[in-house]
Length: 293
Length: 308
Image (tube, rainbow over all chains, first blue to last red; front, top):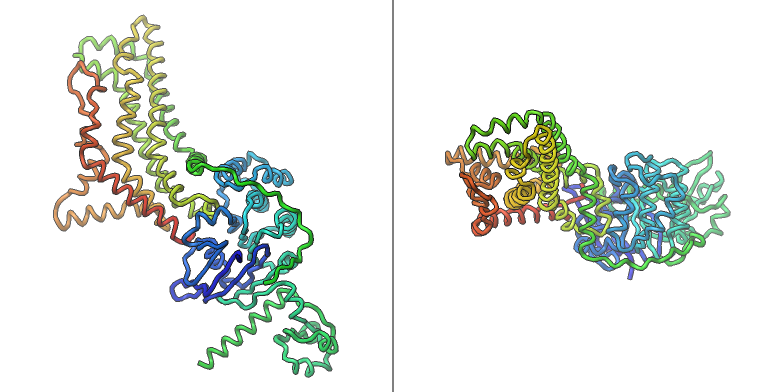
């Protein structure tokens, strides 16, 4: 059973199409990055998966309909929606007591263990904590819950680089065990690159790319083309072309590495560059479709 | 998507066997969290009681003189003179309780959306029904006994202080204890709070919760506007005031015969409680039905509306 399965998932707000009939399949044990520009539909997709918003189309999360079976689902799903949502009046000790009180899968000792590594005092109120501390606390609470799916929406927004790094290190070493599934969105693509097993690019409500990181490595090649080879490179049908430091940087999809290495230096593109290339390509093709109509 | 991982060797997380949870446990913790967040629910009445007690203690040196002057009055007037501070204390606590309950309900479902903490509450396996019913329990179930306990302790302290002052001036303290018996007063107050402030006021609290779940801003305004509009419309169209009368009756609990108040002494008000008459009349049942509809609406709004 896949952890998340969506078919023709669609959501509109008035005339705005937030999700334009997406198909998505996330297997158990994956760490999936949902990446897209502002307004791409990331949060809408997460809200649908968490049963917080209605939708058209078919959606199953852990085999359940999230809109109709939300209460059941929340026993196996955890989410951090935004750093600011922990109630500001609550004390750290109350947050621990409360989650221990209501969540059957919460391991308090484990949460205390995570907190012991921080400087967060138990008797402090959440409003007295720094933004980084609030995130650490929320993560300590969530990581002590034995959930099957963890959803993180921009979990490191507004945090400094040190906290961001700690956050992902902690997520990988202390939480991820290959059985749990993690779905996260972020703007800081380069920081999650080494964390993810799978990528989903979302642009204007559509999925532009859905593949594993291995696939990215085997499929996409970026070539720093030597000036005299430009024409040859173009003849191989690059999906994207840009200039950098006086050289042409070409991105190829499913073209043999051997042939490309004759054109210049070959490397795997980073996610941000791949994303830009794919989004631009999809926008060009949708404009072409629009013009053809 | 394929199934290999690129994340190195993760530490195997220890699995926790799910704790066995009784059905009431989420409810209990939901109540506790309401009281953590809204400490004014108990600090409000406590503060009012403290201020009143302070005022009573300031006026207490006049008590012996007042008691000596009572001889010229008839028994009913004597009774009223002795019991008036005790009745006033109870009335003050009742009004405080109504304000506390109303402001609590108005903010209960609005505040969590305003500060977005609703996303935290909704990330936990607590149903919207449990959450909303726990909130409704604050004014309907928690407040009445809380007010009774505060009132009982307050009246006890008033009586003890009176006894001390009367004893110092060589008078017997039996009159206040006989006229304002604290246990009986507490029981009467409990009966009044349960029948009028909980049972009859339930639709008002439920209405405030519904508005709190619905409004995007200024819940107080939205809570007041529809009833005012109905009053205005009724007056304009039919030149009648039935709606106002209905609300007034529901709020005051009058015409309900929950207590048939005695006019003459000697009397024991405990023998005048008429819960049968109250429960036999349709008013509380209609009120409860309206309460159920409003609460159902609040639950649906919290459940099916977008996060904000």
